[in-house]
Length: 462
Picture 1 (tube, rainbow, N blue to C red):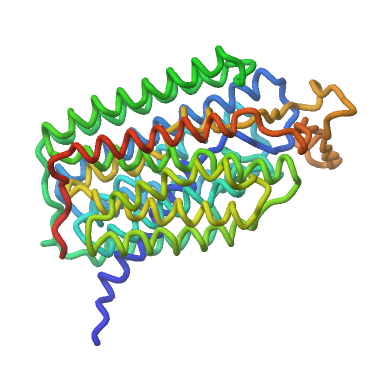
Picture 2 (picture 1 turned 120 degrees about the vertical axis):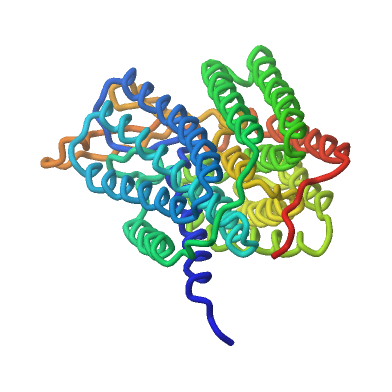
């Protein structure tokens, strides 16, 4: 059997691009880093990270829309190369002694580069079934696995999961350069109607900016477990669902592909309690499942889901798995490692089944849907349990709390005594059950919305 080197390189580049873009766009709010800046500046820095993710998502859709309009596959891989080069330069700069202001600027540059990578990879690979599926596997599985690294004490970085690994950066660059050089000049990207691209860009901007605003409102609740806190969280969730419904109607009038938007919303909601449990295992118990184990499970689960979705419409099965994830909070405790890994597998399989059942033929809509999990900031804020991270200046020692102190090195300007106030592990997180029910409602609402759709725009097999 003859191996098509050009096709194989393209599919590998799609997978690596999806992984790299997801690593750069993932920025969980919980952090452990040694830094001696005032608390107000730290809060501002954390806030800028969520905003930078919104910018990166908008850039991804805009880049994909532009590339589809131009129709050049070589230009699409050139966008990926530019994004990777920017990430490599950031990787060189970050180890230096940088202030939080410059780190914030680099954080925006990183997410913009990730947007170029994701938009370019989607435009170049979406019309190939293998390339498209590997791209989805890379994005979704990395998004799931990256959450498990939250809580590790890392050096100065633009995000809480650190910078992309050197091996990933260079491998992606080599594959993308090879694709740009060897691509067939006659191989063109199918052009999209400008009205579809404009609608997708308006949708991602409206959703991402609204999520960021509501996210800041939820985060400002001093006591989220109180009545007023729950009113804000429920109202924010309803606002997100209403806006999603409005946006899908807007997309359906142009391309009949709003179902992918609903699917991405359901996946983001179902992942909320899983991500909370992943970080709670470290913050509360000092225990953490290996990110490699979670990454392997996530990749296998998403691949299985995408593969099974090809045989018949598996939307109902995928939605059932996703709805069962938050409901399992009532059955299993968050400190049970087997139950946590089982929920990760369910999340991966359910995501693959649902995404594979409602895949849009238009790559711009595909880029839009793949950015939704990263910009679902309201869901992530609602899922966070009552765990606090503060600098040493603000720590008040209490016999009922535990603190972890990391002494500074004499030659490292950025390392200092930093304590992290941790809620006692014996306390039940006050928002877990309510959050689970709220996220289950989001998945059910997604199911109702998809059920009422007359048709789903799916790409033709190649």
